[in-house]
Amino acid sequence: MIPASIKLVKLILNFLALALLVSCATERGSLRRKEVKTEAPEGTQANQKKASPPVTYVARDVIDDIQAKELYESAVEAWRSSKRDLAIVRYNQYLESYPQGQYVDTSAMFLAQYWLRSRDPEKAIAPLMSLLALEPPSPNRDRALYLKAQAHYGLGQNQEALTTLESIEISRLSQ
Image (cartoon, rainbow, N blue to C red; front, side, top):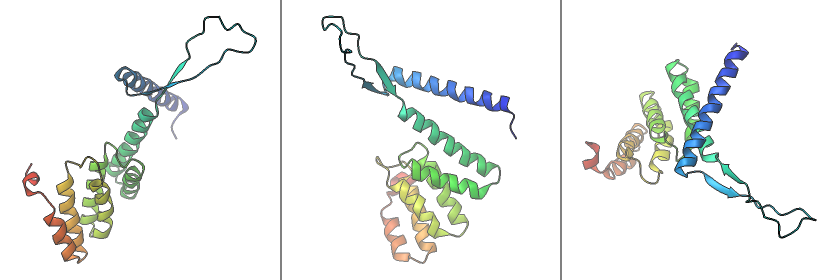
């Protein structure tokens, strides 16, 4: 059981991190501006100087990035703590929730390699497909195709494995 004071410190640190990210994102201009229209209340004179409408910043992208990173890091931590099943669930949750996320490459490659080593090639194909669906294409695209070919071969789908291998650009594999 975590004492309340530690929870409070953790909450404060998370809030400060969020505030810092919002501040940085605001300076970069990556937050969307949403102008709120305000009308003068009834009974006021129309020639009064109107105040400029308040502007609110929508920090949804920043919050999504934080949640994505926390989910990814929880998967990594679960793996390090030998909680394999929990790690697999969290990596899959990450891929489903953030299909264009920052850690899609790492998560998909990790899951695919795990399932191939576990001799369950059928489960290796789904995470590889999420990586192969990325736009712009992932730098790990050819490695993902190679692992996908291995999975098809492991399933006895030799023609599919060969077709997948033929789509790999050999020149990029050595990089």
